[in-house]
Image (cartoon, rainbow, N blue to C red; front, side):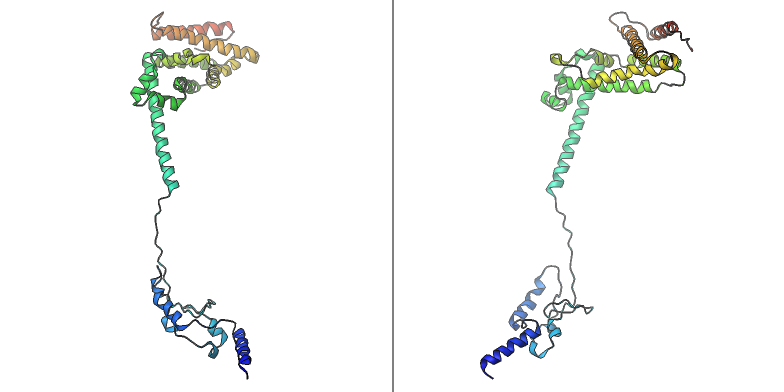
Length: 303
């Protein structure tokens, strides 16, 4: 047979085997020498199977098969993994995103504390000395911050006063809503007495609610006006019950009139610079006013 024919025959046998010839023995030895350097793998290669073999003398399947300890065929090239152990090292990575979230959380808590502190100082000054004594510089100094920090938190100094006023009317409304509503007439007296008690304890804070004027004649915020109207409207349900034949417009006007009258009697009665009235006598005046007004509406007092 010619040399060319021998070459063609060898190529056919290689195609029938379905795989390339085994690596050169020197390459196989190099792999065995450095395999143990792979991190996390111990004895990855069974060197007993690393000797060179002549693929021509072995069946095709044996030349391609690589078996694990359970005998499974990995379809790799003559590497027998006698034991594979992977060490998983848990690495704690400090995520930049997590750090940013933590820093933002700390800044938010610090900002909330400063905001709360500014409000407490402003509320204390208003409650003890009145709205006219409130100065932004005094608040900033007491809070240990700059005037700019106060403005950053509330937009302007009006923002500080409005926030205090919102909390005042919210506290007032919560107490008024707690008045028992079983008997409508008694509820009307209870609303008046509760308003008197709240006013007596928070006179300057309530005055701030009604006396504050916005800088540059800006309109008063609608949400606070609505909150005040909602407080006045708490007299509406009992009036509907005692005056079932009255229309809604008349009831709405009557509830505002009653509340405004009670507010005026209490406000002037607690004004020490003018016609101050002792608290007990003031309570009697409020009660007598309601007696007369309800009697004029044809409603008998339940006292």
